[in-house]
Length: 345
Image (cartoon, rainbow, N blue to C red):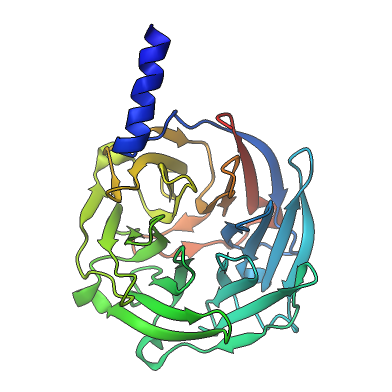
């Protein structure tokens, strides 16, 4: 009788409360170290929407590496995009389009987007489009980027340490012409209350989740799929010691819409919160589950089938009170990517 009632409760919680049907649990199965000769920040990771294929940005190495998962969960280099063909300039964040046919990279130094179409299984080594930053955002630096589920919008968080300007922007994306047109932007301290780092769309595309590193917060904003505009003020703020959110970097929503993952670089953890995809809210102020003993976790990604989860780690990075980071003297192997398998799948 107990098991029957428990199953019934979990079913109703999942359908009407937006809670995860079971507490997540992840086991590390593979780690790959930085393939560059010298140390490199490994800023982002993204899973392909249809395959066990990942793209990882090695910022200081000016390269994006695509890894293919083997049958036993190991990671093998599938393709490397690098200079001079790649026209990369400190790639900060790379994501696949929702159809998986284009790879989009935000470059820190050039402030340009480079876009690579897929042909015959691999992505072109030379970008099919290079889009410079817009005039309105020329003084801002990319951090996180995310596509809306429909693929029509690209959201961007411009943030680093407190010495840099901050902004949030959304662009209309034309997948055929590979063009971006600014739909809305909030700029400067008057319009953006903290330093934004990670950004993600809700599964229905009606909300944007943003992490603010200096405020130790996750904030959720309403978004219009008709106009491409986000609300200027958050509808929910997740913040405080109970949350375990400290200097948050990336944020990702699980494919089934029940989990929100946040990387906390200051305390070296990744926190998983229950997410209600019907109301687009975090349903409690403390994590369901936490991965610990990491070294400056940064980029996050769920696989499309939700069997796997990936974390990039900077290693023993030093930081100052302004939020700037320093990596002098670090060895190449200290930057890494770790792949986890979910015990719930």
